[in-house]
Length: 188
Image (cartoon, rainbow, N blue to C red; front, side, top):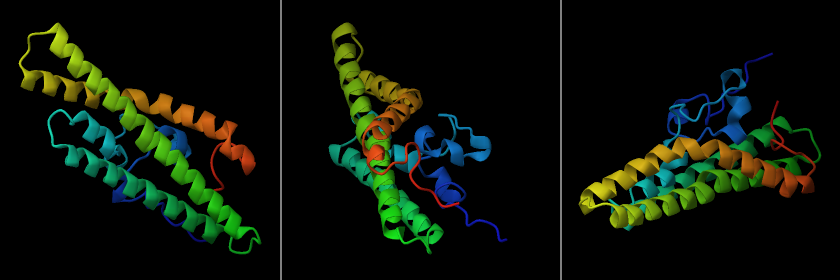
């Protein structure tokens, strides 16, 4: 019995670039544990970092950060589909299993890694910049840097609640359609 093929998004250098968030990845971490402070997050978090830096950088830089995050989400979905195809070679429902793995991963990652956290950080930073402008006499550059620092500090705080919420929403809706609450069909 040979060793299992390493997960590109967990067991290689991509881990240090990628998104290993609690809801979809907790069981994949050694020992099944995960911490929002685990140093393994930039492409999946690229849009959150981009939103945090919005007060300091040109808008195209922020949009590019969404491109990076979306590329990571897409690559992860393709990888999970490839793994499902490999694990279910003899299964007559292989195409369905692959489709479910790709769609589930892409939707989960899109919501939990891109859309919801990006919106959250965007609104938090916009509100904090406006409030600092109203409540303080700080110069604009200092307000912008304070807003960026707040946005960056918020990232680890929002991860777990967003992941759990997306898991709940998907378990309550989409995953009922294909009858597998929790994780999408995974190769063994």
